[in-house]
Amino acid sequence: MNFDFSDDLKLLKDEARKFLEDKSQPAVVRRVLEGPDGYDKGLWAEMATMGWTGASIPEELGGVGMGALGLCVLAEEIGRSLAPVPFASTMYFAAEALMAGGSDAQKKAWLPKIAKGACIGTFALAEGPGKATPKRVRTTFRNGVLNGEKLPVPDGSAANIAIVVAQTDRGIGLVLADLSHAGVRRDHVETLDESRKQARLTFANVPGELLGAAGDGERLLATIEQRAAILMAFEQVGGAQRCLEMARDYALERYAFGRPIGSFQAIKHKLADVYVATELARSNAYYGAWALSKNAPQLALAAATARVAANEAFWLAAKENIQVHGGMGFTWAFDCHLYYRRAKVLAVANGSTRLWKERLVTELESANAPG
Image 1 (cartoon, one colour):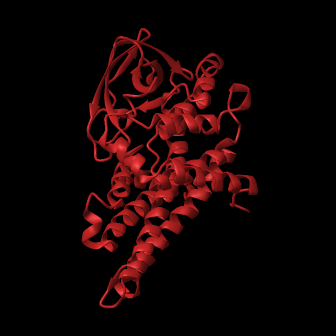
Image 2: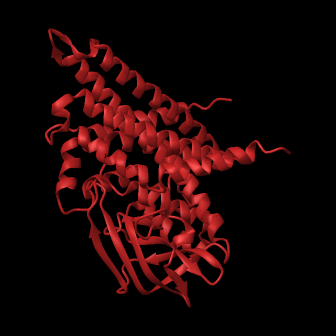
Image 3: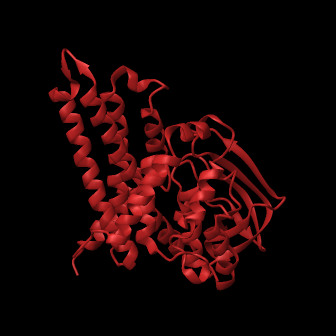
């Protein structure tokens, strides 16, 4: 079985890297990190022009029909460059939710706009500290309106629509809400990584539309989380790989006691550990990409495996990148902290490492249970 990408996807990867190396340099990330804007609008517009915002959306709905694998390739390069755009919120969550559970009318109304870059989407599950699980949801959707509060919501201040997880008369439901309604209040929430800003969304009698059939919310939520976990794993692998390269390059050019610090055994061990963790995460992400593209029965197991490995690899790579850079690595002038910030925030987005480890154990127990 071949888990590698096709030549066309490898070409897409190369072109995406060239584009982002030119358009999403650290200065661009810092501008969004330090400024009031929620994302880089120019970069987002150029991505839309190249078809990235329609990567996984079918051609009949305005997309370019690359499928899940095309989205995985783009996710890795976006993670590598720390691109300050609402790509994950819109493509991994909102677009995936619409394609998985939306009606024909809902798809036709919103997916073409997403594909053109004219609509930013987000996914609102969490309601404060603690596990973001259906049992903790207090937001309600009854008589066609939403009431409640979501915190934090990625790109919530910039989003045009949100897929909101809420309690309905038939259990958990996923509700499509237009955030331009007067009953929506948005408040910025300061987080560790301000290059991808978060918000508190408050809903007061906001009209919404249910995705999927009544009573099907938990299954649909699980599917979206699994698919997003794999896409996010690719983004984390891209970030981890860039951290490894930064640490390696610095270790080769920085001298101490008349020799490159990369020649010291302690530095070699750090770099080797990061390399092993990154390659393990990459292998698991590739397996996840296969399960995602085939909608395979192993999707839940592949998602949990990819998510856990990628979380740990990116955090280790970001941490050790700072350590290899020594005292300078902790300063604002160096770019190491940008990756550390992103690694910490992505590690709790779409569920924490602990939550996904629990899911991984559950899936392994189920797969190995006696027939």
